[in-house]
Image (cartoon, rainbow, N blue to C red):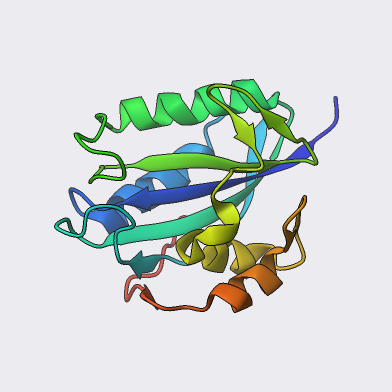
Length: 168
């Protein structure tokens, strides 16, 4: 079976967010038939939704996987559940952990629970900057190169966290 590239965005703003993102990065290593091959440093960012919540901590990870996109998504949701994720009371509200499958190989699909590439990827610098750190030449179908998209959006509201993940 072939190994296919996949990219995941990680975010948290509850219960020591830096620690939550580091724990999630480590949990990616335990996904069957999947290898975590790269990850970005951690970035603090302003919340995208309601502003009366703590800053988020974000990162990106690069994987090689033999799982289907759907099975990989199910593994990400399992990690979220195991880490105690509860649905936020409002859209884009606070959360302990959020794992989004951004890109899976060259797959383009739009289903009720899985859209690839992730529909908001090109509009969110807190996703693009960490992703550009590990895959600047990655092409997002119909949108462009990750590094160029990140430069166009700019780093407003982003800052590297003092604590750098050692979840290598």
